[in-house]
Length: 182
Image 1 (cartoon, one colour):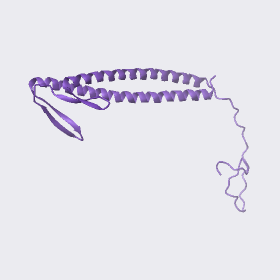
Image 2: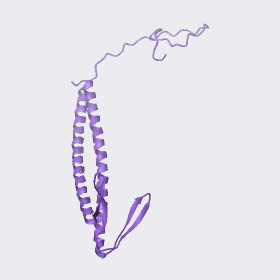
Image 3: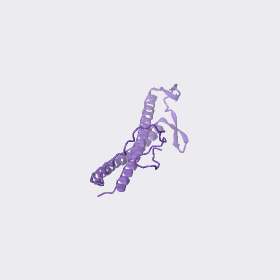
Image 4: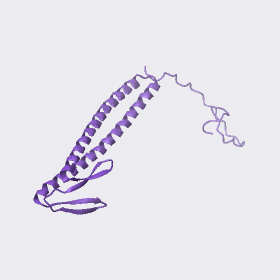
């Protein structure tokens, strides 16, 4: 038979795993947003590269706060983009290199996404297993058999008198001892 303290320990373990799973799901959502951003960037750079063949490339660039700039590149030579090359250092790279770097980063982030998703799946299975063990243990725990409390006779009700009222403190089963109600 399993003790109550052991059940509590199992419940705490399950709660800790659930919190860890919530954190994993939160990170997965963040990484998914980053992958989506890289996909958009990749598509824009690819579109700019293709439009260079015509000698004119154009785009609208959002700079935040609802403001968009119109960008025009009029040349048959590929344009350049500033790209973070690490540690907050930016370099000016041709669109094709920026596109290749974006694709490479997206693939690395996708691997991280896959790893975290696998960890989340394994953790979900572990939580399910622990929850089943907890339920089985809880079912085997039988409440201690205690005899029903003996019926205590109610104190006699005093007859109404013309004497002054008793103090406002309640009496009863415990006599003159203080109770939680006092």
